[in-house]
Image (cartoon, rainbow, N blue to C red):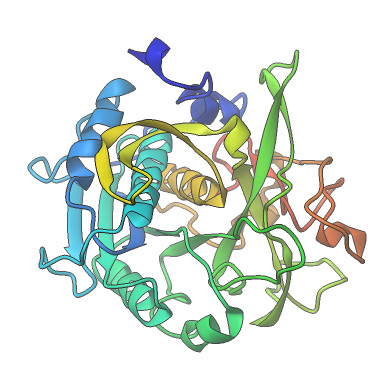
Amino acid sequence: MVAELPVPLILYALRSWLGEKPSGPGSSATTVAVVEAFGYNNAEADLAVYRQQFGLPSCTTSNGCFRKVNQLGQAGPYPAQNISWMQETAIDLDMVSAICRNCKLLLIEANSPLFEDVAAAVQMAADLGAHVISNSYGGDELAGYTYDESYNYNGENVVLVASSGDVGFGQGAQFPSSSEYVVAVGGTTLATASTFRGWTESAWINTVSGCSQLSTKPTWQHDTGCPTKMVNDVAAVADPNTGVAVYAPGVDLEGNILPPGWMVMGGTSVAAPIISGVYGVNGGTIHSTSDPYSHLSGLFDIKTGLNGFCDPAYFCNAGSGYDGPTGLGTPNGTSAF
């Protein structure tokens, strides 16, 4: 039962978090792909528990809603399981489901988290017709930038979304969120308040922000302190202290995989699939990395919080208008996407 789950924010922290305009059901004609590393044998079964818990429609292989392939686009063989990536996959599938309940889900399991493998999985997601590709990983920009102009990070008719990372300001922007072709997603913290939303938001202290070393400045970014791509574009809830419920396998002290159960998750790995789900709700009618910049009324401007010490101040301090930690803000409905 919902009352037995470990946090009060559960699905409520996603649907009503979007503001006065609730998320829509999305369309079964829209496919959101999640790119992961390693295998997750029970992904479909664990997803079914999450969706049943919250009254979401069934999403299975048999009804055509769920599909799992390896990075070659084949239904097996799949990579060996890895508990950290199994939990990551559960986050991504659950969060996209929470926001876009009718979207089809495409899970692509790359052989490893090396860029050559996850980039190949991104390309495969596009080749298989994904409208949105969610990426909850990041790494060294110099290593990743090799793939910036290839493997459909710059694909047409598909939007790529990526988490910015969870190590705060000062470590540098990570790829692929630093790519000019990708929607970079930062994180927020929630605090209860007597408002119509029931809480306020501030920048999450651990979200990554910063100026790319390599990527070209998108024409729609107009901040003056960074001559290249500035991370982030938008944000969503990420603080694990105000986290979301996810149904996923656990792990014991020896690293053994435990049976699945309910747990609290956070990080920009939560925020990215939330934004991917919002894009999915629109069913391909917008699908552009630039759209939040021309739809500011569909975003909540986050004006407080920081993730470090910096100059210029907006690199690491939330404030009126655009800032690094939260970009343009968080979704108020779906119109900005």
